[in-house]
Image 1 (tube, rainbow, N blue to C red):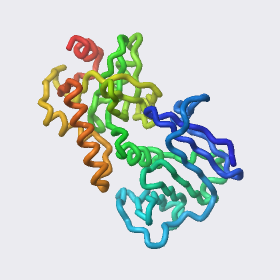
Image 2: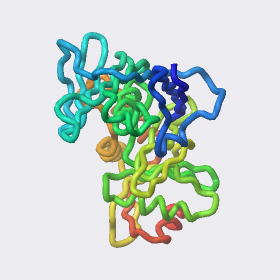
Image 3: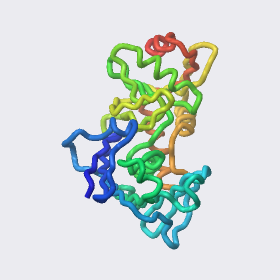
Image 4: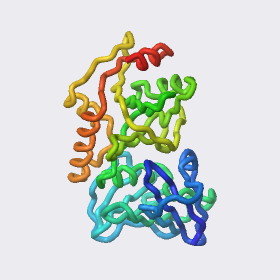
Length: 292
């Protein structure tokens, strides 16, 4: 077996291994999330190998990404994520097969497209994020379009919003502040624990390329949009839930996973003060938020 590594994302340990003839390594921001050593036993295991990736006979289509890149199938007691590319022909270049609880996976890669750029990252984007969204939906958490900020005194602020709302701009402004840690400028994971809601950095960054493997207890949620002035408007729980859900990555094809995600986000908006933040993208917004 080829030397592997373990990723720690949102306190979930994911062991990645491969056959001896397949050199592997984390790439990009995922390298920041590789465990240096020690720690608890992995809760998820994924093994990679060369082969001829294909959809299993009798598999049924569950979800189509709509961009021709990946599709999700159900095959007996497993799920299969099938990847194709117009540049590589009609045949899949990669198939990832996972158990029903998403805790055990097998990745089969066609040697041709990858052999010239070894070692490879078997969970290369978007597989890592697609897999994580489904794993979280098994009662573990939810991924959010948002920038995660930990203030100098340890408070966790989430600035949630769709693409173009200003998450990266805000993240860059916060980065200049002494003692502040920005967990991500684009995607964070929320998990509920006995001591409250915790926010985690992820490898999936935005244009600011900010991805930090840290966490903080979540105190405030700001649902952001551009404005003529910095303004804060408190939101009732129902309105906050609707806006936060619109920023979430939830598996709509998985009824139980969708139900869990809604329940978790309901707990989140009840536990954390939520407000709509109209933003002018300059340094003054930081003082405005801290004063609030």
